[in-house]
Length: 99
Image (cartoon, rainbow, N blue to C red; front, side):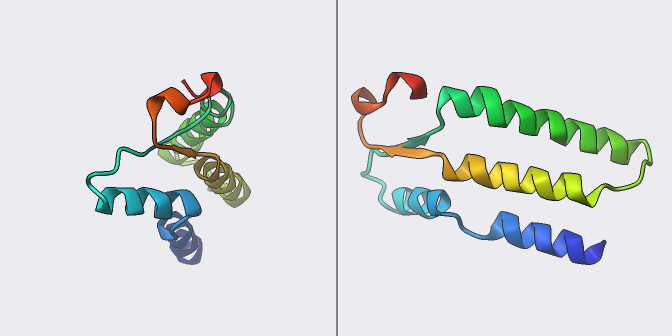
């Protein structure tokens, strides 16, 4: 169990491409760039991830056995969401499906 928690922490803490871009933006305070997720990602993958997080939380709260595969699938889904973020420098350049 401790090993799984450590692996999950490393995955969460590991900087993704999107995270590196965002960190770079924060350093450049004059930059007006921003990141955004598409509507399909928010309504699809993000919605599914939110339901899965709630389900895992309720199982843990009720004392049900831990399901490692479900947790790993959730982590993969969250990483996919993170990678799908798009970087924009101008609000006018954002496509409709990202507004």
